[in-house]
Image (cartoon, rainbow, N blue to C red; front, side):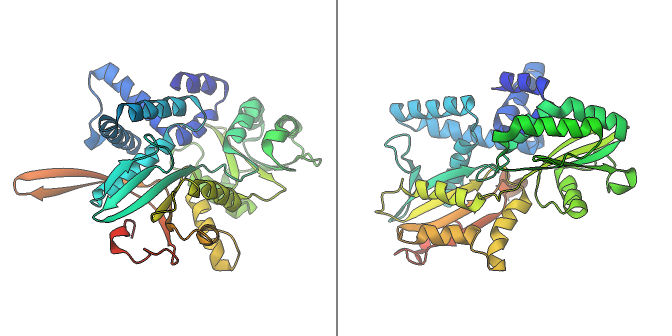
Length: 388
């Protein structure tokens, strides 16, 4: 996997930004292997960065679960890992399942793996005399969107040389591009129009529409030559200056030259809420319907602003967002007890002292949106309050 990512990075300078989001565990493992090759040891968890801590947590859970599975289930788990390392999805969905299982175990719940042994939902949990079924789904920022991030970064690979030449001529620049529908179906035409605009220094008015905005140093609220800014600062700047909310952005900075920001948007609206609902509706079919069911959705690489927007739309009276998804899923599905939306969190360190023993703890905390189904017969069962 890392070898293929490295090859693509040589051809496309924008690729590492996408890979860092999508293949965090794989890249962290490569860094650990590199460190061990140079030093003879692996990095200490106490001083590790967030990505390495997540990797260690994943590996600890993976090895612990594998050792306790039946041989056929072990074989299924190995196949799951190999498949994740070959396709575009990566192993993040598997890592999320292990994270949720770990959370439940810390609540004192027994976890029985089902998907790898008998198929269907991911695992069966028991808390005393109460049983429940759990299914985990992972979603990327691409679901339901006209401009997928992977396609956006691929577009950057086609036009990065022209962007570099524009930076040499014009200093900083914002390139605002409007496409008619989906980027993957218009890639060649979009690349041609953007290159034409950058070469001529003139807007392109035919669809895809390209508008150029030259920026002076005073226009930009951060120093492009510094490292004191990131995606959040760039997104905020584009939103305030050009009224583009949560756009798909590509950024290229050249020291002493300036910064180029490329935004791609579609004339047709995204269908993020509908895309998530369809996937969760399919996931709900994994349950037996005989026990309370927990449907857990992880928003893998969505920006905080995108997630909060999905949640906040309901407050403006719009029939969209997480509440809309929960309402539709609960209808005619009384067996669903809880619908949970979670986001990647921030690893935190703490310690406890028990007598003469000091323990170090590493936990990850992030945003969680929890919806309970009032129609479920076990809605008020205290033994099922796993996420409250």
